Amino acid sequence: MTAGKLDFTAPYGTPPEHTDPQLDALVREIIGRVADKWTMLILETLEQEGRTRFTRLGELVGGISQKMLTKTLRQMEEGGLVTRTIYPVIPPKVDYELTELGRSLSAAFCGVWVWAEHYQEDIEAARAAFAIHKATASDTST
Amino acid sequence: MTAGKLDFTAPYGTPPEHTDPQLDALVREIIGRVADKWTMLILETLEQEGRTRFTRLGELVGGISQKMLTKTLRQMEEGGLVTRTIYPVIPPKVDYELTELGRSLSAAFCGVWVWAEHYQEDIEAARAAFAIHKATASDTST
DNA sequence: TTCCATACATACCTAAAGGAGAGTGTCGTA
DNA sequence: TACGACACTCTCCTTTAGGTATGTATGGAA
Image (cartoon, rainbow over all chains, first blue to last red; front, side):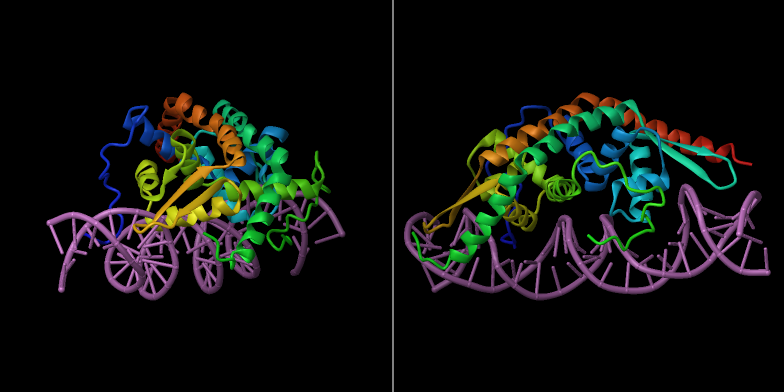
């Protein structure tokens, strides 16, 4: 049986861990929860706007459904990135604000935003080049 | 693109765009493609290891299936983040290397890795606190 | 002669992402 | 009396993520 596919159980031995595997696993888990489109977008919006209400937040983020907005905000609350404040008034009022942790993550993601803005032309160019390359790939080279 | 989502059609008026909406949309699209767990992990691995073969890459990334590895690498190639080199030898050999663009993105994500490492305790504490809060909140309900 | 190694492709399947739309509760307004 | 506002929740549905298993090509090793 074996065969199967790649048994990624290290025939090469232990991969060179520069940090201890526990921390590494934890960091990966954190990244997995945080490296999310909507999370990044909401984080950014809250960073810019500060304390914001639900509907307003949805408008500012743009293109997000109510469902994903709710869900992502809950996750972020759970992860300690935002605080959720409920005002017990008759037309319901709830607002969201970044925590210190949230702000620090926002700052960490800042580089990615800058990257996307700075390299947008290169990124598009690379994609275009790839498309052309694929189209021209009928060339029997090497 | 076209907002058929919520009625987020701005009863508040136009959201305050600090940049032009076209750039904004492009940046969001880029983020959407790049803010991905596997992409980040592979990026990081290639940054550390340099030119790496397929199977080896899978081991180093860890926990990734062959399918996702292939898929993510293709996406990254398409996005101009990695180059794929095929050696026409008998046991197939293919390796991957970051492009300049890939390296710059890796650098941009660096802050997030640092954040995750630096705040891992706070992150866990926040999650624990939220769990307790939820438990206590349901208790105090009347 | 059979098997192994590499770097996939392909097919099949389940779970999660994510959108659309309707319902909820309360109250002020038209 | 009906409606709209807000911040949801719930159901239904489609798409994507992602895993497992198997196939493929080929030459050298067993």
